Length: 217
Image (cartoon, rainbow, N blue to C red; front, top):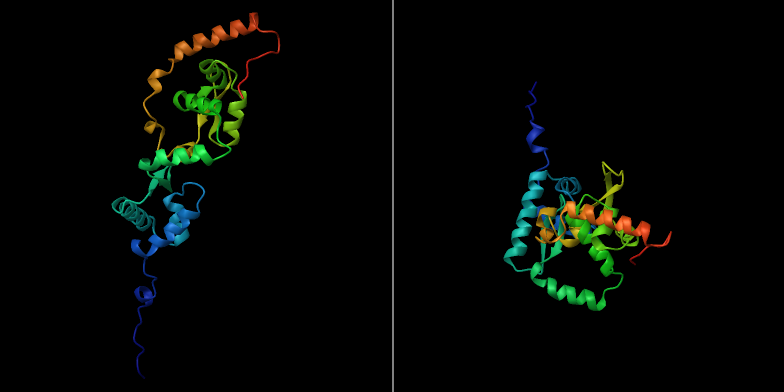
């Protein structure tokens, strides 16, 4: 009786791991369709490759776009990967947006968002004190657009604290709040803000008719 040879199927039957070069086109397709930044782990699950291989492929794509001078780049923003336009083209894009884009934030919305970004976590009352007007309308718009969120409460007043979101970082093309332009020193210090808030509150109680307030659309 002829002996049956042992067959080792462990190595032969294993599916070979895809290389970064092989999955790069798949990652490009996924990221082009994505509406928000996508973490490496999610991309790895989608293409069926280990996270280190996916991250190597993403790094290679970053280098490729940089070396070929593309008008876009691949960035890790807010904990995930997303395509973005290059800063060198921002002036062109800004002109295009101003001339043809609709449904943009108002000046009031932009100013309110800037105050929140630099002073966060910050209460609505403190934002109003900095801007000198009621910011309820602007805050509602920013909340609706997921640019800010309510997170936590002020220890003294119990008021909700406002912070920017990861979506805000994605929209402005920043990897973190530490990349904000250094204009925060130009804003009032916290003690000054509190004094202004107290003064505004006193004035509103003595001068303004009941129920009347200065608003900002």
